[in-house]
Amino acid sequence: MPVRVLEEWFAGCGGCEVAILDMGEVLLDVLPELEFVYIPVLADSKFFGQDGNGKEMDYPHADVALISGSVRTKENWEAAKQIRARSKVLIALGSCAAFGGISALANLSTNREIYDAYYGASNNNDQAEIPELTTEEMLNKVYALNEVVEVDLILPGCSPTPASIAKAITALLKGEEFKLSEKSVCDTCPLERKSKWGLETKRPLASAQFTPGDYNKTRCLAEQGILCLGPVTRAGCAERLDGEAEVPGCIRAFMPCRGCWGPVHTYTTPMSNMLGALASIGADTSSIPDKKALFNRYIGAHGNLNNCGKG
Amino acid sequence: MSPELESLSKSCQPFIPTIIAFCCNWCSYGAADLAGVNRTKYPTNLRIVRVMCSGMVHADMVINSLLKGADGVMVLGCHMGDCHYINGNEKAARRAEVIQEMLPDYGLEAQRFRIEWISAAEGGKFAQTAQEMTDLITKLGPNPFKKKGEEPDAC
Ligand code: SF4
Ligand code: SF4
Ligand code: SF4
Image (cartoon, rainbow over all chains, first blue to last red; front, side, top):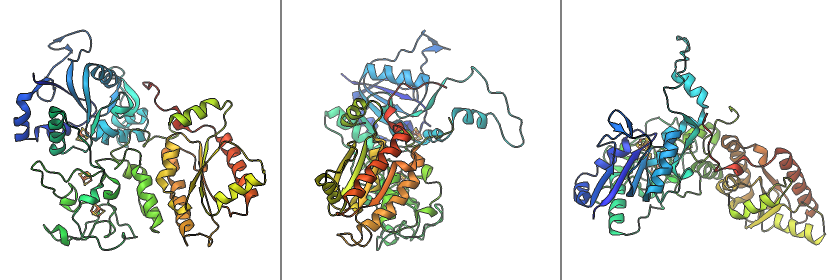
C-alpha cells in the first residue's frame, strides 16, 4: 500500500515545495510508493467556495504530513491542529515551519504597524483605509509549527536541500531513523583557515577576496572580517543529491552564511553563541549592525524576535 | 521551562525569584562555602552551579537559563588578577558586556544578569550580593518567558 502523503503550505513562499520537486529523479524513484492525498502546489483543492462544497476545514487522513511556512493566521493554527490529529508523522518542512523563518521577521513589529506599512503610510501617500474583513484574521505573532502542535521531525533550511528531503523520505519509507547533522556549517566548509577571526568587522555585504573556483585557496570569510554565521549554523546545505559533499550554499558564491539552517542545537541561540564567542576572543561586537535581526533572520519564532514594548 | 523550574516557580507564592548563580570553583564557590560555615543568612532562592572558572560560562548558558524561565542569572568569579587560569575572568567580563547588550533584544531587562567578583574570603559579600540580586529581581517581577505556550490571541 502506498504511503499517504499530505503537503500543506502556511505562511511561506513556496520555495520549500520547489525543493521537493527539485529532488528530480529521486522523486521519480519513490513516487510509486507515495500517494499524495493533498498537495496544493500540484493540485488545487478547496474546502469551500469555487468548486469546494464543504462547510468546514476537512483535511484527509495521511501517514506523513509535510507543512511548510509559519503559523501566521487563525486558519493556519486550526489547520495545524487538524493535520496533526489526522496524520501519523508530521514534518516541519523548511525554516519557516521549523523556526518561523523569514516570515517571523514580522515579529519585530506589531500587527498594527504591519497593516499601516502595507496599506500605504508613506511620505507621499495618504494612509489608505485598512480593510476590515478581506484578510484572514492574523495571530498576535508568527509561530513556528512546534509551538502549536507536536512535530516529529524538522527539515530546516530556506529552502531545505532536495538531498535532505530525499534522505528523510527514503528513511521514512524504509522505517529507518533520520537524524540531522550536529555539526556546524564551518565543519563542511572548504575555505582556508589560518588564524583567529578578523577582529574588525566589515560591512556584511562587503565583497570577499576570493580565487574563483578554488575554494581551498580562498581565505575563510570570517577571517577576512566578513561576519559569517557558519560557526553557529547547522550543517546540511553542503549536501548534494548524489551524496558527494559540496560547498555550503552561500560559500559556493563566496557570500557569508546567513544562518538559514538554524541553530546547531535546538538549545542554543546563534546570537548568544556567536557574540559570546566573539567577546571571548576580544572582538569589538559593537560594530555589528542590527544584531537582533541579523542573528535571528531565520529563527524569529520561539521568542527570539519580539516587538518589545510596542504592545 | 524545565519541570524543576516550573515546580519551583509554582510552589513559590508570593513571587520568590529563581536565581541561577554560576560560581567559580576557586573563589566565589569558596565564598558561598564560607558564608555557610559562618552561618551568614542569605536568600534560599539561589541555585548555585559550580563551574571551574567564570570564563567557561558561555553567553549561551546565561541566555538559555533565562529563556527557560530563570528570573535572574549571576556569574561570580575571582577578582581581576586572581584568576586560577590567568585570564578567565577577563573573558567573563567581556562576555558580560555582550550579554547585557543582548538581553533587551530578548525582551528582558539587562538587570536580570549580574557579574560580580568575590574572593574565597568574602563570605559576607557573597551573602550581600545574593540579597541585592533577590531584592532587585523581586522588584522586576517574574521572567516573561515563564508564560510561554499559551493559546495565542488574535489581534
Ligand atoms: S523556509 Fe524559505 S523556502 Fe521554505 S517557505 Fe520559508 S521562506 Fe520559503
Ligand atoms: S567562511 Fe564561514 S562557514 Fe566557512 S569556515 Fe569561515 S566562518 Fe565557517
Ligand atoms: S551557507 Fe548558511 S545561509 Fe547559506 S544555505 Fe547554507 S546554511 Fe543557509
